[in-house]
Length: 237
Image 1 (tube, one colour):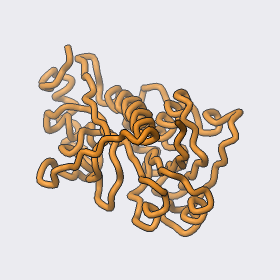
Image 2 (cartoon, rainbow, N blue to C red; image 1 turned 90 degrees about the horizontal axis):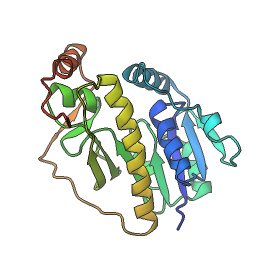
Image 3 (cartoon, rainbow, N blue to C red; image 1 turned 30 degrees about the horizontal axis):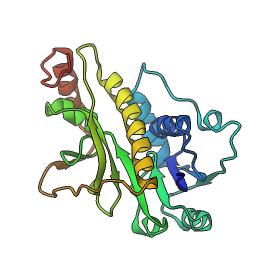
Image 4 (tube, rainbow, N blue to C red; image 1 turned 135 degrees about the horizontal axis):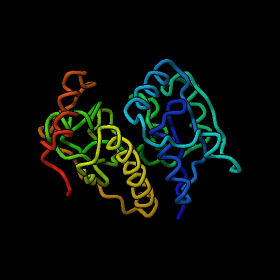
């Protein structure tokens, strides 16, 4: 059973490109792609490229969709009227977020069923930004979580969550890279489960976990040092 879904992504965001690559490899093809071309997109793209420095970079969006009839639109803000009008015309069952700013209720109300995200951290313990860095600094497991979107920040019902095995040869950059792949794989599972009407909805306990801002450089360095010195408590080997 196929699911009619639209894909939202910040312009050329590597996280979203990795997710789209995995979706297409699993024959999950969006009805449309809407890229946000903005300063926010530029900042977030460069930030993520730094996080995966030295790791493979996914193909550009034009390469990913080459030979496929997937319309691509550009907007200045995913929350603006232009984006909403495009979505209303498409009438998607589901919105899939491939790395975006926080999406507001005026857009969340458009899809017939839901909006889904794949967060690069284990919910509910690590909401918000810099999940990999915070997990290293706080000595917590790494992983990803596909979840429904509600008006909060990473507070929607969980569809599927999985821990990422971390090895002693891993670096901060390799963990970020592998979590992006895991996030894409979990999105495949989420979309398929939604398509067949079997998607779990596990509510998050609002009293569990924290919502983090971007990790300060000094704390990130402490986390990297913990990993490098094998003081991290969650190695798989």
